[in-house]
Length: 181
View 1: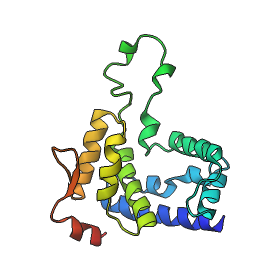
View 2: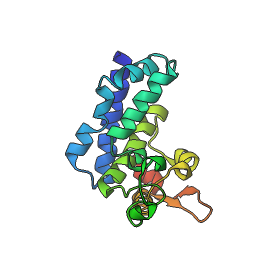
View 3: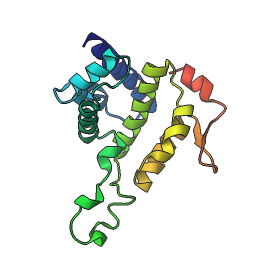
């Protein structure tokens, strides 16, 4: 449990620092970031994973904890996605509201999501740099088109450019920007 508390506390601290750099996120959001990880629904699975150096021994417990986390933390893109079979009635009813199976993520949460990625990177890799992670994961995310624009704009502010080949590269000033975080 001690290792879990240490990892989560460091993550929260790094998200706070990254969030202040990213901007557009109220301080109270940064302070309560990932609070659900400390609940009975999530903490045991997180603690077990931390105890075993990131290895998940009880996949069922982890799956329930991770789903709970995603469904209770609006800075996760999964929070804003629909399981289409759960929508009843005429699908056209949702046109203009739901796109790509997602609701639009408010900018505050989209920016917090980027800060979350940065905080996780700092804890798990020792670096603020997101380049490899973005290229491995960004295209797998299912988000509303306006959310995608907000995230790409936020990443561009941090020096990450999404090019025509749908990969990220660094703007020349990114190394200095990351070091000054």
